[in-house]
Each structure stands twice: as C-alpha cells, then as structure tokens.
Length: 360
Ligand code: UD1
Ligand code: UDP
Image 1 (tube, rainbow, N blue to C red):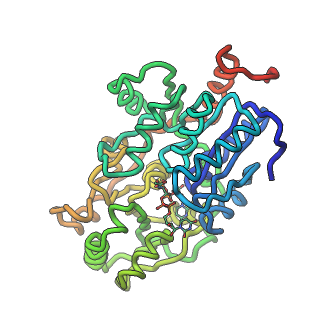
Image 2 (cartoon, rainbow, N blue to C red):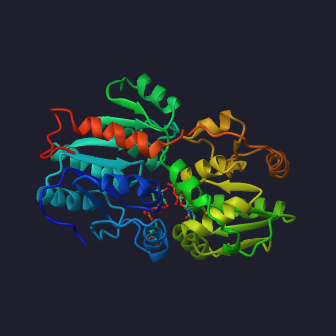
C-alpha cells in the first residue's frame, strides 16, 4: 500500500529479486525520511518476490504490478507515480530493465537520479544488463560505485563528477543474515556444489544448455544442488533437456535457504552477478559460467574463474578440482556500506540543487 500520495523527498525503485535483497537494509534507513519505495513487479512470482520482502523484513510502499520486463511499460507507470508524489531524488540499483525504466523516468521528469552499483562493466554489449548499466550511468546525477575499479571504468568514460565509492550494499545484507544459525534450513550434507543459472546467453541457447548437461555429467562424482530460476526451468522444459542424476533441482529458494546452501557448499557455479559477490563474501570459491564478468575483482583475487559454457577448451573437471582447493580469505566490497551510502545521500539532500521540503 502507498504510504500517502503526498509529496515525498526520495523515491527508490526495485523490480527484481536481487534489487529487493540488495536494497533491503538501505530502505530501512531511508524510511526515516520522506521516502517512498516502489516495486515495479518485473519479478512477480511468490518465490521470486514476496518471500524476499518477508524474510528480509522489508516492504514496498507501492507495487506497480507491471508483471513484465518491458522498459516502456515500466517507465510510464513510474512517471505516473512521480507525477503524484513529486520526489526530489530518485534511486535505482544495478542494471535490470526496471532500473533503466526508473532512470529514464527520472530523466523525463527532471528528477535528480542516484545510481547505486554504478560503473560495473563486462564489456559485452550483447548483454542487456551491460547496455542498461551504461545508459543508467550516463543518465545519473550521482553515481555510487561498489569498488575503486568501477570508479576507474567511469573515469575512463569521462564520468568524474559526483562519483562515490561506497562499497556494495550486499555486504551488510549477506553478513547480517549469514550470522544466523541456518544449518537446519537444508538437509544436504556438506559435500555439494551449488549451481545457479539464468542469463539469456546460457539458458535461451539450446546449445549452451546441452553443453551444461555434458559438463554436469563430467562431474558426476559431485552432487550439484540447483535452485532453478523460472526462465531456466521454462527453457529446459521447452527444449526437453534432462539434467544428469548427480544434479538435484529445486525451486528458487528464499534468501535464508539460499544463504544456508551457500554457507555449506564447497564451490559455487553460477552466471549470477549477486551470487558471485556473495560467494566471495562468504569465503566460497566460484566458477562463473560466462566468458566475461562485470565483477572482475574476484577474478583478480583468484577467488573466481570464468568458464563460458559455449567456448571453453579447458578441461572442466580440472577447473572444478582446482577451484575446490582455493581458500578465499578476503572480499573487495567494503564495510558498513549502508551507513556510508545513507551519509552520502544525506549530503546530497542538503545540496541546494536538490529541493527537499523539510530538514532531515
Ligand atoms: C532479470 C534481469 C537480470 C537479473 C535477473 C535476476 C533484465 C533485463 N534482466 O532477468 O539482469 O539478473 O532478473 O533474477 O532486467 N519469470 C517468472 N516469474 C517471475 C519472474 C520471471 O516466471 O517472477 C519468468 C517469466 O517467464 C519471464 C522470464 O522468467 O518471462 C524472464 O524474466 P525477466 O524479468 O524478463 O528476466 P530475468 O531472466 O529474470
Ligand atoms: N538467490 C536466492 N534464492 C535462489 C537463488 C538466488 O535467494 O534460489 C539470491 C542470491 O542470494 C542473490 C540473488 O538472489 O542475492 C541473486 O539474484 P539473481 O541471480 O536472480 O540475479 P543477479 O544477481 O544475477 O542479477
């Protein structure tokens, strides 16, 4: 439910599972201000949306119920909301279609825009996320980078003003909930590999799916737990692809169950951005099933390896064995990130160019 349709100062937009998770602690702090948290409804299934609001004790003030990733549809719903609540400042996170729709809506309504998770680059323009994040960075008035590397990418693109290195909000969320005793949340013994896969380049391509099956058979001595994204499930079904017996598929799980799996696993196989980050934060080695990543820091630290399903000539079993033996001791994503982020937002609010109607 919308708090009120009166004017607000800050409008935050989320639309997918990772945004709900990563913004959950920040939103709690922003709620001390005149803040509206709007959910676009790009992800709409109970196990891709509601469970995360519930478990992370977060809730949106309005659900725009778009039930689509169509940027124009989402944008017009956000513009309609902006016309009612007239925020002085908008916040979008990351690189999804909802984030781009929010950024375009901010630009069209001349609302100041903060982009959190700015400056990530995979240098693969075939990925919708890469095109989205570049566009959002160009539209943003304030750019919050998770690492110094992302700030450097922006600098090379000529974006130097109002760029802040804050760290990655996932650190606070992940560490807070990983501290809980989550052992009883799954019955799997500790000797398994955790797999997630949802990128178009992997799951919309029947050849990539067939190679996935071959690679998973090659590690038939390892049990693989695979919480399966709806997009992936649909494509496996449509293409009648069966996964080998060492793979246990489960529906997408809530955040606490996922963290319990991450804490127990020996190794992560993924094409997810967020899962690459959480793996290194929780000290787990990772193999990223892509030919590039916008999260190069963990590769540079030796905690993550690229293994593109379609192009790899390296022996998969050897790569898995090698990564199973990697000790991950550090992560590049900072500390007290929510606190730092809120402080910078406070300073932005106090700038004369951002008109806030009452002192915060
Ligand atoms: C989107 C983001 C991607 C992000 C991912 C997080 C874009 C371009 N992509 O990808 O960056 O990493 O979310 O998971 O914004 N579906 C459901 N229920 C849902 C959501 C999706 O069944 O709640 C199915 C539908 O068939 C839908 C398909 O998944 O058509 C793809 O959903 P979509 O939001 O377009 O893209 P994702 O692959 O989820
Ligand atoms: N996640 C989850 N349950 C699952 C799979 C993933 O809670 O079954 C969480 C995971 O911990 C991470 C986020 O979802 O925080 C990543 O989302 P996703 O991989 O869909 O998107 P990406 O990060 O690639 O944009």
